[in-house]
Image 1 (cartoon, helix red, strand yellow):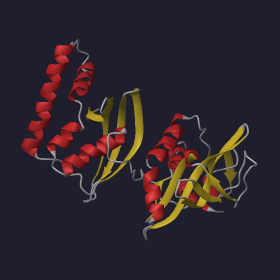
Image 2: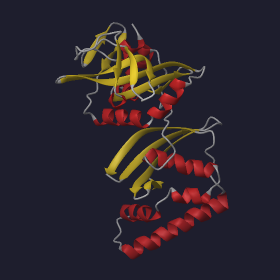
Image 3: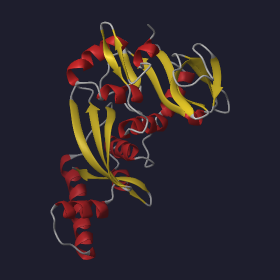
Image 4: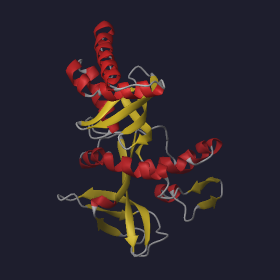
Length: 288
């Protein structure tokens, strides 16, 4: 049985002799929606490496949304490549279930906007594969090792390749970590919003506050941030790999982001950070 046919069953739960049940997570599920969004936000990494693959990257595949009238299905493509306009081409890699417009091993071209996931295997480790991770999340904990073994992949939190800019909450976190590693205080401050951080902190303390209290608290937070760096130095995130397994929406402009970091010395940390979308992009507030 091929890798892609192992990943998805033909119905919601498919029994396989000697293998764990394959669990299908509906597209409307919040976890699956986040997986698809995450794949789109990190697609640039897949494209760059597909164009210039490294020795440790042994597999490339893309998942696309095939629409057939009122029916649709997300299907993996093998042998993917993009043309100069960014259109995607590949070969249908698993047997379609809900659509009849394509068939196994058929070569097709498709609009890049219909991409819903991507995956590579690097040193035996799954990179990307966000919808696979969403499915795995729904598997009982005791069955996860059998799930991993059945598809022949080492599945951990992964490494996420968001761009280090202020267009996403995760990018804002990577931006401030880059500023720390570069020992650039001004760049680090640009990644912060002390006013919103003050509001979140005061609200968590269940205090009554007005504009003056918010501004005063924001000023204290900024001075404390600067003093802490001057006294203790910049945190060093150079060589760190990060994954962002969870996004918790507080409201449209406020997300709590879970970040997992692996450090060059073998250390690992997990933190939850408040992020806020300001007029100048996403900003990092404080830890939860």
